[in-house]
Length: 327
Image 1 (cartoon, rainbow, N blue to C red):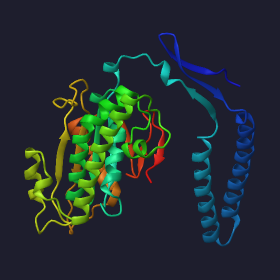
Image 2 (cartoon, helix red, strand yellow; image 1 turned 180 degrees about the vertical axis):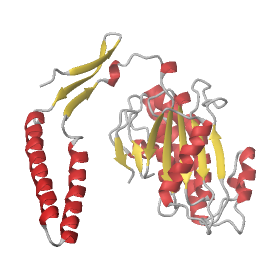
Image 3 (cartoon, rainbow, N blue to C red; image 1 turned 45 degrees about the vertical axis):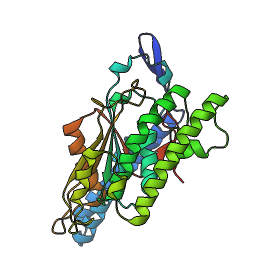
Image 4 (cartoon, rainbow, N blue to C red; image 1 turned 60 degrees about the vertical axis):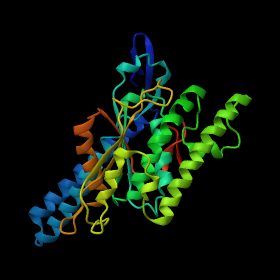
């Protein structure tokens, strides 16, 4: 058995790694299995040299070679199983030394995946316990819906109040939907309850506007509060469909210029991406959407760490990446 391995930074143990107890028995099994495979291959080669019907023998040899290849590739990953324990709370790096983080959120249909679910997913990630200027959230809307873009615009505006509220009060449920619906939360004192009520009123107001737009099926001009975003919705013409439309990339929040309402915290990047689609060329579904996100993020932020959330109904319910289902 190998001695346990550990990694430390300036004397602080960040993780420990211990070999599993089944390592030696599994390696013994692998040796016997390998001997059996060698004997089987010898039998196939001998049969191939002496048999009259070489076609059947060749097919049997080929099939066993394929199975052997599969077994070797899977077994190689199991020869050294380990138990690892991490201690992230001991990481003493300064916030400015943290690496950048690009988070990909995927959605495709505002009626099958309601925009408020996308909003809560994005807000829970933006409020993650990480330097906010290091976080970039990319939302891929493969359906090219103006409803989803409007919802994210509302989320960007609400996040200016929600993020400082979470950090100041050490809120554990960073998703507004989870936090406001929780019957047993960590609120203490009348002042915090009053602040919570204010934030909840703002959230419900945002929710009602988004749901009204989804119900009507279009974004009315009266609901667009930011002048710089008014021209974006002009792209949704009569010829615009979810299967045939141009590329739309809209920066809704910029960490280099945007601050929260208290002017204390830098806001994370929030980028809406809807790739170009055409009926004459295949779009490869979610694989194509992720490929587009990789290219866009590589040009805009190029973070060394990627977090891919394939389902917008999954959100971070706490600042420490505790994943749960949204609804």
